[in-house]
Amino acid sequence: MSITRRGFVGSASVAAATLASGTAIAQKGKYDVGASDTEIKLGHTNPYSGPASAYGVIGKAIEAYWKMVNDKGGINGRKVTFISRDDGYSPPKTVEVVRQLVEQEKVLALFNTLGTPTNTAIHKYMNARKVPHLFLATGASKWGNPKEYPWTMGWQPDYHTEAVIYAKHMLEHVKDPKIAVLMQNDDYGKDYYEGLRDGLGKNVDKIVKHVTYEVTDPTVDSQVIQLKDSNANIFFNITTPKFAAQAIRKTAEIGWKPAHYLNNVSISVAAVMKPAGFENSQGIISAFYLKDSTDKQWDSSEDMKAWRAWMAKYNPGANPDDGGNIYAYAVAYTMHKTLEQCGNDLTRGNLMKQAASLKKLVVPMLLPNITVNTSATDFYPIQSVRLARFEGETWKLFGEVMSNEGA
Image 1: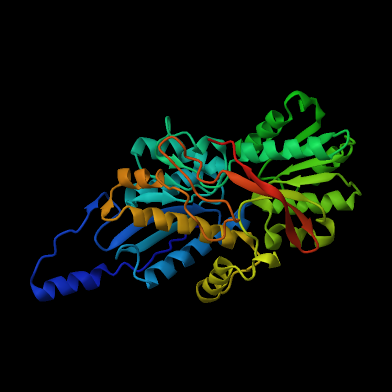
Image 2 (image 1 turned 90 degrees about the vertical axis):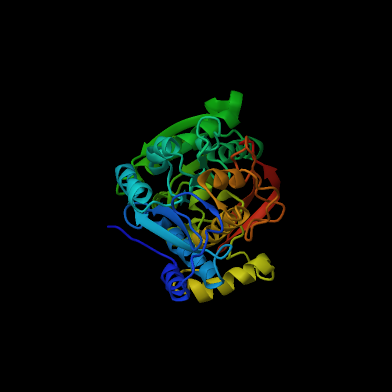
């Protein structure tokens, strides 16, 4: 299945006006393929189908964001054409659709392609082609390596550091810790697991059980039973939304009550916590860098009010309790500002230069005191998080902002 989503280019009306006046219009900017006086063409992949389809809301919300931008006149007078393709969270399919986007659609850049295994499959290709591969929807630490991969940049805090933070919290707050780990068997899972091990340091022997699952598995019920049987009192849950909800439900069903740490990629109240059962989710700990729409403390903030107004007008069918809609809005804003900074130099090289020149960029929906910062040697845009605990039907932040070690 292929899904193509486009903005309104408006080039036909410009051409008609030119012919009518009988005058030629000189280009006002410097361009590479995928950009012109009237258009900026961006490519994107998302699992609208398959085992990670809960993330499909992100692609739809990003499309809605560019619709808003285009309605307001575009970026420096250029409309955004956003072409999003379904890759089903399958690396071979990602390779296929990305080749189409780069070689046939001729996009200026790829933006927010989702998934660690899927982005790994196109990592070398994008850099060999020298096409910007920007603000990926994955926190693998490998996306911050400008020396070897100067055309690829992540966005969210990296998984490795997130896991280091959990490890330190476990050691400080759980008596005689015995850690059981459930992990997706790919680079995404391994990044978190290595971060946990590094964070534990000399206490790495506190990991008493480590089991994996495949993204094609129907459930993780048997894995959760194995973890309980290890007599662990800590559960580190490294799973995508479908499996996260299953693991939370199964943990409650079998009467296992460990200190439960859930990776940030599965914190959506609508996609994970509610399907798992609010009664089963109490006390789970995770890391946050974005505001959560179910947290009432943000209701009076200007960015939350603007986001809700945008949701009502441009994304009315989406669930406001799904954090994917907040994530999409914030990451698209980052890309919007980066393209704005390019001015009339919409070459691929300048786009990467501007992406690597973001200084204390205040992005709507990021938590207070967290900004976007990059440089030519620092491809980790967001380097801070706060911990939160699930209470009632929402997440409650606690503690201070902690810096990310990614850079």
